[in-house]
Length: 130
Image (cartoon, rainbow, N blue to C red; front, side, top):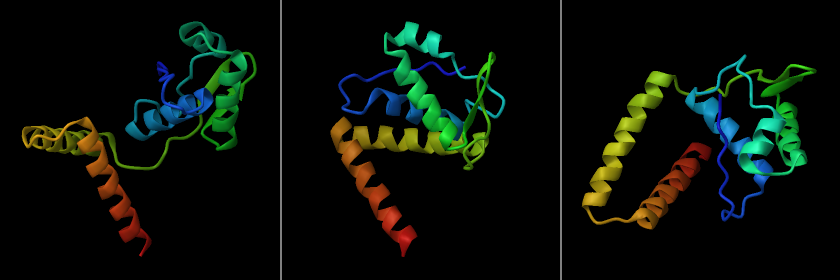
C-alpha cells in the first residue's frame, strides 16, 4: 500500500501531491490494478489534513480513470500507467544512480543536478515533438 508524504514547503497543492504520488507509484509498478489506496480516514490521520483534500485527490484520480471507488469497500486502482516494465525501471534506475555518482564526483551539487536534468528533459521533449 502507498504511504503518502507531504512537502508543505513545495508550493504544490496538497491534493496534487497525493495525485502525483499515486501516479508515480503506478509508473514505478509499486501500485498495480486491484491494489487498494489508503482510506481517506487513514490519510487524514497520518498527514493531519482535511478529509476533503483526500477526497478531491481521489476524485481527480477517478476522473482520470486510474482508480475507482467501491462503496463500503474503498478506493482501488483500475489501471496502471503504461510505461517501462519493472525490470526496465530497475535497469534505468541503476544507470541514473551511476550518473548521479559520476556527477557528484565531478563536483555538481543537488541544484546543479536538477538544472542539468531539467535541461536534458526539455531537450528530449523538443526532439520528441519534432
